Image (cartoon, rainbow, N blue to C red):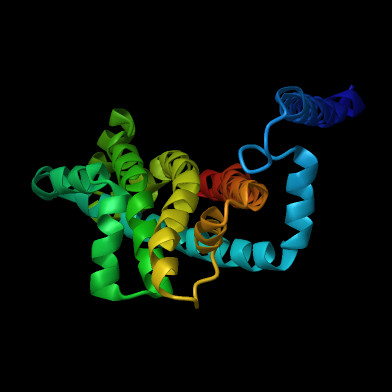
Length: 266
């Protein structure tokens, strides 16, 4: 019986992998047939084979761009988690500060990132830190919103028991509120993992226009778009998707292993 139970997760994972691969191959086949059947020009929609060829031709540029954009997205996500979690803790401890400052957090989220990026370039320059700041801004709201909700959504009976035993605010925060907010944090981090890539690439669209030192995917895409290199653009698109999936996978791995064990031990 135990052997069968051990095989069940593996079989489930294998079935999911086969399903995902099947959908991908069907999509590629439809794409190839569409290009062939409609006789589309490569500048409009290249074939999958042309995209693979472009990815190989510009493999060095794509590799460097993926590393640069991945570094900005990953570091920006990490900073957003740290800053957002600290702000959420402050909001959970003070309802007055939460009511006074949270509307401005929402306002920052509603401002289009394409409007913020040019201003940040004026203030910070054509540098990596500008890309990083934009990424943090994009990722910040889901973290603050989710962690604040998790810190406030504590069990009433447990909260009353902590008060009964004379636990202070710090003890309640460390032993009750933070453990209950871990799942909320991971949910916000998963949402922000995709937003981090978007923020980094959008920032690189602007930063790369004024600095040749930026080698991110956004900079490459801006240059390739000017030469109608659609095949290379699609290759860069898949590279950016790979970054997002990698960040999401890392967050999911932390959620299902390290943080879950830490929560059980607290």
